[in-house]
Image: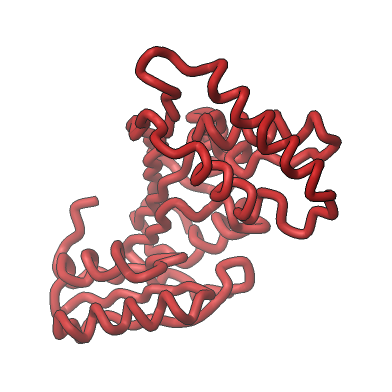
Length: 235
């Protein structure tokens, strides 16, 4: 996004403020940026970063994106980086973003392709053998057609979807297992015996080994970068 001086920006699920702070630097002292997140610890880090950079055009607010009621026609741009899989009602949130944008305003977000990361797709496949079905968090907006449909249903136009691949060869299968098992879409709260857990873990390692080449196992991580606009003629 080529932000302009004086623009008003909302960064949803800002985390430690990476996007929000960059936006604040771009829109300058006549612009303003609001970064929101429900994680107090992350917001504390974001505020410390902004203070260190002496940014006075940025604020941070602790709020859950699923519950945040936004005002009408407040923002020129709404950002959301890599977090839509964690929203409970993304179509509803898109409609709120639409209403919060000024005429001609832009929404831009990034999300994972529905088949990425490979190691997570394989994790879900393996645990299903043990009787547990884990929904794919990237399924809702995991390809170009789905993104187009979601945004157009919310009223947006001029939708563009670009892809970029960030894959790499695995160096630590144990860390990958731990990351998946302990994620929000993993084995938290699952009442498995230790024996079942270890059997599932070993099956996962075996699957990775079987799918590996001489270079190892390539973990495909393809991101979608999505941009859409609230059309000038829209109300």
